[in-house]
Image (cartoon, rainbow, N blue to C red; front, side):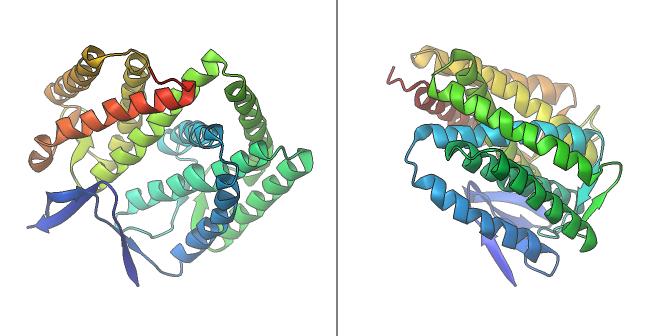
Amino acid sequence: MRFFLHNLLEITHDNNKPRIVGDLMHLQVRLNKRSVPFLLLALFQTLFICLLKKRRSSNTWILFFLNIGMAFIFEYIVLNMFQAYRYKPTLVKKKYFDNVLGAILSQGLYIPVSATFITVFGKKLKWKLGFTLFYYCIERLFIFLKIYKINWWKPIYTVILLPIYYLLSDFFYKGLEQQKIMVNKIAHYLTIMVIETIFMYVLAYNGLIRFGIKHSYSTRLHFMIAPVYCMFMSFISTTLAKEKGIFFRVVHLFSYKVTDVILIKAGIMALNRHYFKWRVFSHCLMVFTSRIIYQRIVRSDN
């Protein structure tokens, strides 16, 4: 059984080379006995997402993206850099991309949803410990099902770190409610980083962009460098998005373009020739998206 997720980019294949034809994504996902547990857990999370929607508070979704951002940074260190474990959901054909997609589901949906739910609904210690135990059992189950393999990671680390993560979620939510300047900046930065990271995954999966060193573009190396690129570009966006006027939108776009040119010249970034001419449009999208997110977070119409 197969289905297609359509979001930002639609790709067709001509002689095994990706070609842009319209929309921005055509990512094929496979359903099988290995992927079902991941998807069932995702389906279970929709219950909490529905509950969160009823809160009708902008801070709820800002906190959700902030929590995803924290989890993504953690996953970059533990998974991308130090290979603590490996996900095996077999949702997509490319093995390393499948591993990263498992991480995106885990750190971009499962854990952040629970953290946001606990915080927004003011749940106390027993809920934090309850969810910690739940994810510990899920981790053990996934190991047993051989859809998640640990290298040097130990499930007890999950038990130790999750309550800390939930406390950080509480802390940042309080700062958002009080409109703390530094918390707003962190929320803005992490939200942009999450969007950049997911968009970059889609582009890389479809062969439109690669990162490497001296024109050597391995998949492992790509996922070491791409998140750093996303972090840096998010810093640019966070810095410039708060400024008013078309001049700063142009400066923002120019900064993106200059960064790309430097990386391409240095052999760190490679763009598919079919995507190259469309790159400026994706940058424009991020320029205006970052501005809109800034206005939403600081609740400003300026």
